[in-house]
Length: 185
Image (tube, rainbow, N blue to C red; front, side, top):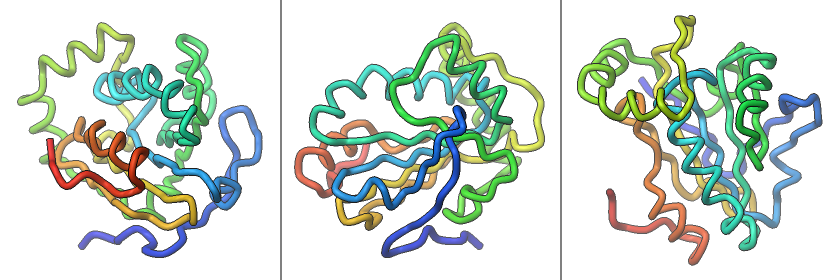
């Protein structure tokens, strides 16, 4: 049974990979994408983070923020960020405290299905710098949450496979109107 994300005003406080305090309440007044990834070297994750990195400067002009959470150790995420610096906040959550708070799921079947059916996508992610490693959290499935200026989740996206994140078009619609797009990609 899926644990649903907090419906009204999700809260958490943590530190980012550079030991700077990060409190979700500090983002009130801004729209936020809270995005959960597997490990920092995951090819699928690497490709998505690459997409977010390239769109972030335009999004930031509209007051939109991105927080990316990884299940890797802090040092691994810092190393990942050193190779290609990300303009948004990165959080290491190897104990899965934030993952559990938002009901991020695990699935062995979905993980293996993703590898078999999404091999070309995985290869593109590896070319972009992702190198998979065996770890205890490989079966985590991505999840994304769009949070409005009042700190309320307006859309929860629980991935269907290891590379399934909320479509970029839905993020753009949210930035433009405050509401998710009704068209799915």
